[in-house]
Image (tube, rainbow, N blue to C red; front, side, top):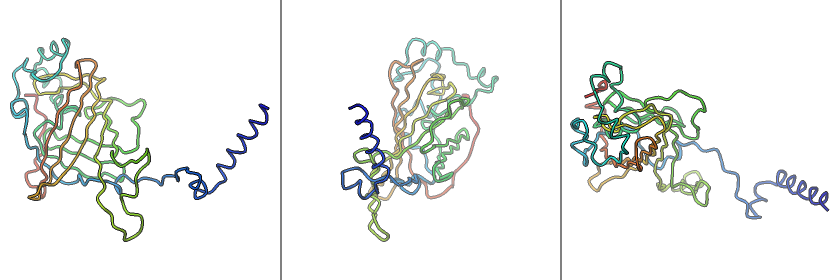
Length: 267
């Protein structure tokens, strides 16, 4: 009986491999998913120039807070102790003046962004504040053994495009010339492999094991202005008692006017 069962299972497997996709679909099996080009299926056009609109935490973002001012950041006792030792002159002397421009904090820095496609599977995000560059990789896992970087390693995906676990390509039109309604979705980015840095300019720390989840969403207001909202969730078992969540707003600019790359500043 056991041998018969094995033979039956082998026969089913061979039938599966030999059966055309159309026939499998008749039995309720989903058709094979076509190769996905993240650039081609983008539900949002994030490319172009954007400028920060500081709508919250003005006193923490537009000026450097005093040492020990870490209000609203869920620091544990060790995080507070480290923040209380902040010394910008020491950071400058050791070449660490960019610690508040890392991946966990850079979107909160008042800045202009330039977003472009590096290739069909990689979005490039450049900031003029601190002259930083982030690469958001679609469909590529973090390298197993790579040195941590200030901007870490970011894995991106278009979220909200899947139905029952499969990519909902029907939202993009099914035939040449068919209507292609704008699909709903947003950009989800998860960043790891970061160097330790600061959540705020005054030395509020995050550690090497921190991770960052970001959701990029964009919308247009009735007057035609295009907005970008980035929700950031920083999780850090070393210095935070719970995830640190912020929402940051950018307004789209017509061109590169005002783009002014400047170096990092420890103060």
